[in-house]
Image (cartoon, rainbow over all chains, first blue to last red; front, side, top):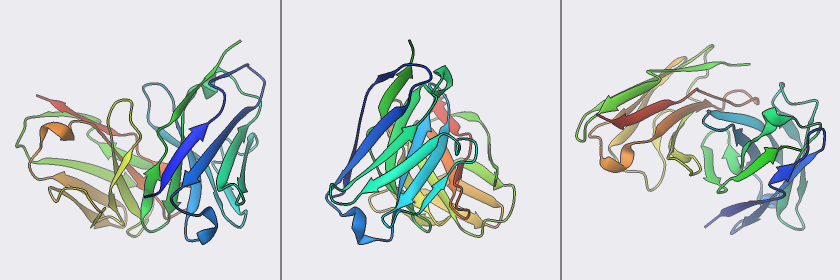
Length: 119
Length: 107
C-alpha cells in the first residue's frame, strides 16, 4: 500500500520561502509511470494544482505560480519537495502531495498539512 | 489553460436519491477526466478515472460518463457516507486543472 506523508513548518513568515517534503512509502518514486504532485486548498475553497515532477526530474508547474515554485525529487530518500518563495497570506492553505498518472488520476494522497503565512 | 466548470455548485438530496453532477471542459479533453470525493478535513479520494473507470474499492453506485467536453458523475442511490464535495479534474493537459466543486448535503 502506497502512503504519502507531508512534513514541514506549519507557520511561515511573509516574504519567506515555504518548504515542504513528501515522503513516499510502500512504493518507489523511481519505478516510473507516475508523476508526484503538489496540490493546495485555501481555507473553505477548492483544489489548486501547484505542479508535479517525474522521477527523472522533469517538472510541470501551474503558470500562476511558476515564477515562485520549485519541485524537486530525491530518489535516494524516496521523497519529493516543494519550495514556494516570496509567500504572502494568500499562500495560507492546506498543502497535499499525491501520486498522479495522466490516464488514471491521483490515486494516493497525503493527509495534507496546513501552512499559515503570518508574521 | 483548460477551464473546468461544474453544475450545480451545491445540491440537497435525500438518502436513496439518484444524484447527477455535470462537469464541462473549455476544450475537448477526450476521456482524460477524473472525479474525486472530499469530506471535511480529509484528502480527496479518487472515485472515477478516465471518465468512466471505477477506482478499485469504490462502490458501484458511483459511475461516470462522457467524453470530449461534457461529463457526468452519477450516484445511483445516495448513501449517508456520500455527503461530501465532489471535484472533477482534467489530466489531458500537462497543466492539470480542477473544477470548482459540487457540495452534496442532506435535504
